Image (cartoon, rainbow, N blue to C red; front, side, top):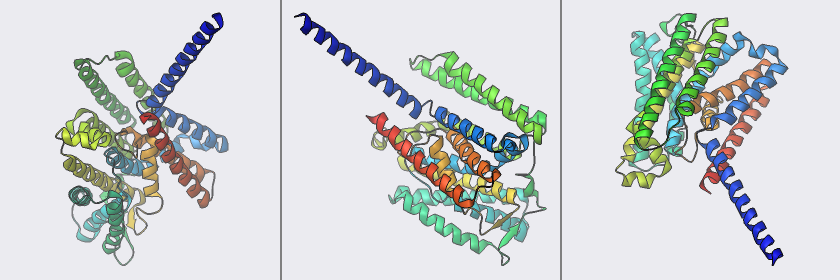
Length: 405
């Protein structure tokens, strides 16, 4: 009798242990795939930085970190648009080629036609938005696969770029007003002012989000949900600005990226459009039943991605001081997609944050910068970037599977 009771008690204890272990595993998976998705990315970035610093101590010098910050901007801006597209469970393979065409439009109007700089910049962004609008309409109205539509657009954009280029094969931008965009720096005081404004915006968003959840009856800890994130942002941002000021100051494209990230963070977290993005990515049928105009949201998403591609094209052309047939080519699309996925945007939709674009671009950019600094051959760079993308997609699939189980 005693043996039977002991066996029953042991079985109940094992069941409780299994349940406890399962609950803990689920909490960890949900945390990594959700709110704390940035943690493994930050750990990976720290390990990458330590590795390249051990290989070459110039990697963490203020000059190289400033160069790294400028190098990742174009990738991050493209990845920002891709994050929004991925959230609604779509894909856009045209952003890299589109960025080159928008830069070509800007360069042609500026150099060949002689229009004012501000009008040329506006034309580039409008061109990107218009192409995104056409793609969104085709995908939404005709139910065409986004993969094929955007791939076809990418090929068409390569042809359009060649049509825009003169016989010399390039449009030089040296000496124009556009060159200052990617080759200028903020005064030290302005860098800290920008940081203060950014912290204020993030603080307002966090407080507003916390108050909204409290009104819905969801318990919110002010310390963990508001104060600690603001403190962490202030410390990290202060270190970044201080390091950049040791060289030439905060680069203008980095400041522009910060403004874009803050704006998109507001749009995705504090507007009805942002709520609809995640609803559609999470369950499209439920979204339709909730009277969400799925087609319209998709169209707006591709328009925003197109506009961001236009901005990225402007920055890239300003940085290289020209537009050529090589613009937007190479591994730019691969890096943008990898940055979005590595940062936490899911290929299965409904999950991701605009900050994923920054973290993913920083990780990809750190590897590219480090490999260049140690003079690694081109084949090694391609091999590493390809493997990183495969690993990121595999991890995303595993997290999605575990979260659903």
